[in-house]
Length: 208
Image 1 (cartoon, rainbow, N blue to C red):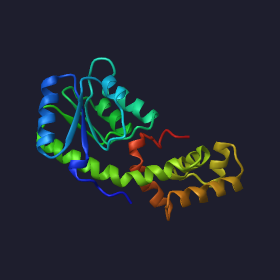
Image 2: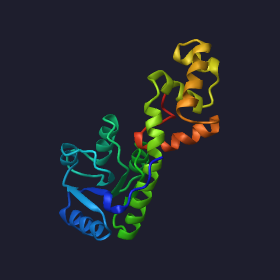
Image 3: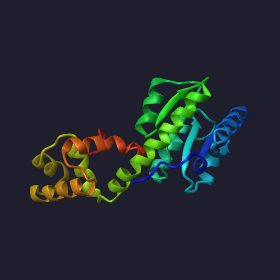
Image 4: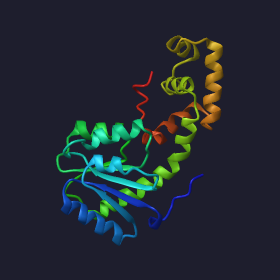
């Protein structure tokens, strides 16, 4: 299992088009033992992607690519970091969409820095624990991922077979493989694992 790393080994990636906010967050997080990297736009962040462990703290409403578009892009290329959005113009649809895409949290400006720090620490801790589930999920074949989605919706073998255009016996083999690879002892356990896959931005309600 992954071990939660100390703040000194984690980097906070800050994206905000307002320099004053970036400077404040850089100072605050560095005072609390983190390394920081800051960017004035989503494009700048994408252009400098690397494998440094840490947490992304990003504004949502920015010129050019906004935060939702950024997270959608990061999901597609499977560049996974726990993400917390901050915004001064929160709307329910935007907050719902950000969470569906895998954002850990959504904070309205103005916010208390201590609250943001608490949420960042929680996000890093949860993300470290979720990485094992993410790796297991990525080991599934495309067909097994489809069977997984059907299983957590409560579909029986015959229904899954009909939906995916495979035989019932093949469905049974895929189900057994899914349970084994995901290290789930029951369907309830498998359903709980879907919560750990949020960093991938997978919406199991919309998956075939």
